[in-house]
Image 1: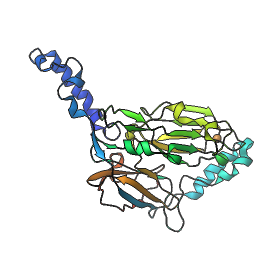
Image 2: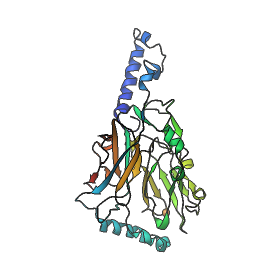
Image 3: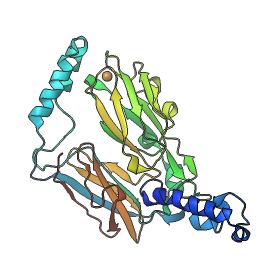
Image 4: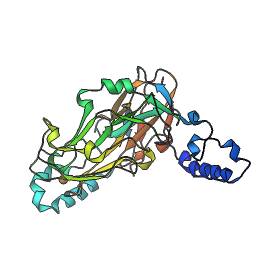
Length: 322
Ligand SMILES: [Cu+2]
């Protein structure tokens, strides 16, 4: 899935196009290019087509913990307090945000919350066939809500599943055919404080949004802002980084999201635990483990770490808090 993961495809593409163009200039080679001037029709088009990987019944779970190095909590809290105190208008309502939420670490176990863990197939030209899962999706999976109580984002880190790849016509790694899952992503604000929520998807992931959120609650998030409609967020080349979430009015409010073409992903809970279901029954997958501040902590960075699906338990340690 070079579109999301790997750069070599992107780097090679101009070179390929150039060589095709050069071949096109030479008379004797022209005969081999019966497909016309469209380089994608040249040669074996099916070779570039994404290949399905069946999802299965395996589970991969684990815990993400902090290593020996500790974040400077005192400084994070002090910086936050200084920023909040500089906004006297909302100060009283925002005091609950004094406690930093960038590093949420369980005191007893050192488990780290808000780490995004997800899987991708072993190879770039493969995709998880999750059509059945997408069709069965319901309840809270169909609705992702970003709450903004007391001038912070709750949850601060999210994973979205806005589209899946059409198994009947998957397209290529550089241009997959997506089908909407129908998942909705809302921003709400129950407090009496005004928020101007800003969502900045990286290139290829949708358009940016900056909107005042009408008063709304978990009971009826549709009264808030429909971020999915406003941004058209979709899966993208993950080498571009996370989708950034912020608030224009309260500059200390920060959050992040990833949009993936499948639901084999989790955000770690308060104890740093994650559990990913529907893992393929055999073979290898790549695992990605990302923290807002520490970045990718898996081996291989944004290209993922190859693991066997029989590796049912995978723990990770954050050794560099940056
Ligand atoms: Cu705000």
